[in-house]
Image (cartoon, rainbow, N blue to C red; front, side, top):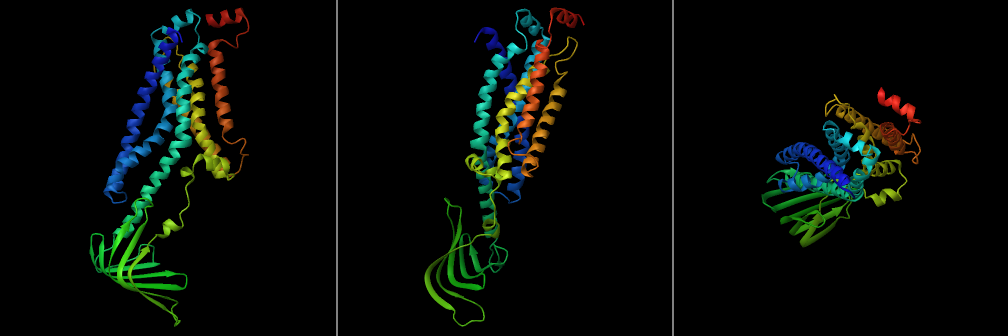
Length: 365
């Protein structure tokens, strides 16, 4: 890589880093405020605030990297145009198309990183966040157990009463659990709540009690005396909870034929593709006229990015609803914007000027 290529690479890298960091700080500040609000309201454990914030940052980095590179390239090359450095490079025979070489090095590195985040790390982070929220919800529902009050952690199937509650210990316990037509009633002198850190399950361990089990109205009840008895309590939300498509691994999405899974898979693959497409668009859009300001075309670039993302969202909905074949999917959006970028780059590089006379007329105009 020659001196000029290293210079272009450094300028674009610094601009990308600055833009991405500014956007990252803004979004993470908003996310941090929302997480603190949930923790203050008791919807999340306070010790999980920074864990959720760190896991959420992976998603934001995946989203911000393409737009950060897009705006970074535009700002870096716009500065070179303003300072007449692009004119000097053009006099040396380095046009817009030649700039793709050093910029593509940065684009390739970012694309590989985004692909790794989108396909591997972000789904795992989403699963971890859901597990933390689910565990917090479970602990919240079971944590409302108070002395002398009946509590139902699963909307009526299980009724728990304790005469005295001291931390995790309970005394003079009454538990009724209904499963179909059978009813289980447990009376115990004392018990405790046990949380398994590996599985996240919560269990009531009861001591010195009696268990009654049978169908109301029939005589064949089974009565068992016990010295220790464990009773796991799961909420209905946990039992009927479906796995979110955002938390599924990419390997499962590859093996699935469901429209929702294929739409999610193509959405994840779109992130690294966007990096290349936006790079093709950024190089010609950064070209400014002599009297045009440094940020003259930045608004146009943001408008193109918004259009790009909205078209991808529309295409994803079409795939989920099976309104378009999966092989068309979201790919037509990348193809269309890529062709637009190539055509703009070709126009700025003079690919479409067929003769010196036309070239001279264009230059004069």
